[in-house]
Amino acid sequence: MTLILSSTSWMMRQVIYALALGIVVSYYFFGWGIVLQIVLGVITAVAVESAFLAFRGRDIISSISDGSIILTAILLAISIPNIAPWWVIIVGISFAIIFGKQLYGGLGNNLFNPAMLGYVFLLISYPLQMSTWPINFLSFDQALEVVFNLSNIDAISGATRLDEIKNSLSLSNSIKQLEIHFPSQVWINVGFFFGGLYLLFRKIISWHIPVSFLVGIVITSVLLWISNVDLYIPMQNHIMLGGTMLGAFFIATDPVSASTTINGRIIYGFLIGVLIVIIRTFGGYPDGIAFAVLLMNMTVPLIDVYTQPKVFGQ
Image (tube, rainbow, N blue to C red; front, top):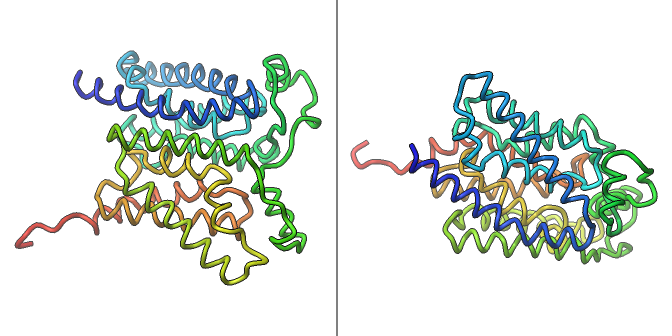
């Protein structure tokens, strides 16, 4: 038991280390909001997990020490707008831990990715707060004022880049009329890409899900773009905008809720990529990573059954 806990804790730390570069890049462009969201998320995660474990009569220290709730808190905190009101991350983390993890029996038993379950719950419940992002770097004082509702955020906020493109296309503008050049989004994705390479190098994750995930995005976006170059976003923008690299290396690769067979991982990752482009293009939300991951989480038992290696003679 101690060996399993130690191994899990080590893996969770490696994933957190790998997230650091993307978080630092996000801080460079948008400031202290992301730090406040992470701090609030981690504190809430520890408090809610401890309370629920105490209610169930389970050991609190060992469960918290494995690092899984810290990782869940960080993933959700960096996925939501970093100027979201303080209560958004608290509500989201609480929902993620209770309904995404503990009600299934704790770590290793959950069907859905807890962070993405919390994200979707927030997106559906609080669309205004979840669609307002900073447009400039915020100092610590500015971030504190905005997150704790002490000042007006209208002057420092705007829509996501994918949302701007989607809204512009809905007004019958063509892709050629848009200037799709967003260095902050590109560099944040680059940060998470290198973090993902670190995870591959340390053998925390295998290549099957990230590569098939990105291939699914590339093939689907290229086919759409070829069908109408004036209407659909080019492949490179699907790759470098939104949370693509975060999704490919850190979210879809969740070892509990993802497929466990080699062929299953390839199918799982590829279909997530396909769904992301479909949701971004035809859905009501600008970035479909969370929805795509949760939809594919539901199919994992079926995928695993039909991709298990066959034993000779059976």
